[in-house]
Image (cartoon, rainbow, N blue to C red; front, top):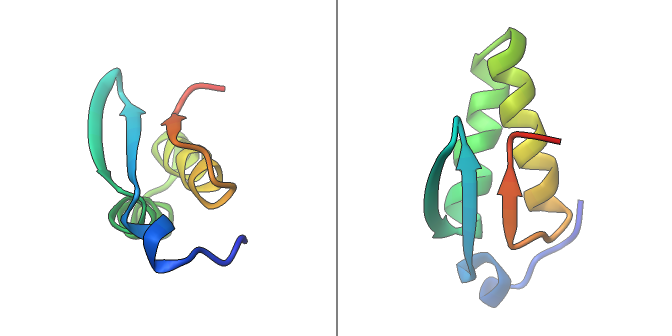
Length: 66
């Protein structure tokens, strides 16, 4: 995982999940999708994992579709 600066964590990112778009800070998104990975299973967990991996790799637009 990349070590993000405070400025990078405050950066706005666009998340597309279940065909719905949401804009939030990278820090909020990482927390939300990490929690989703931990508490969900099956295809829902896969969606959250895809987005989480994109977030921690530094992408600004993340999607649950590969």
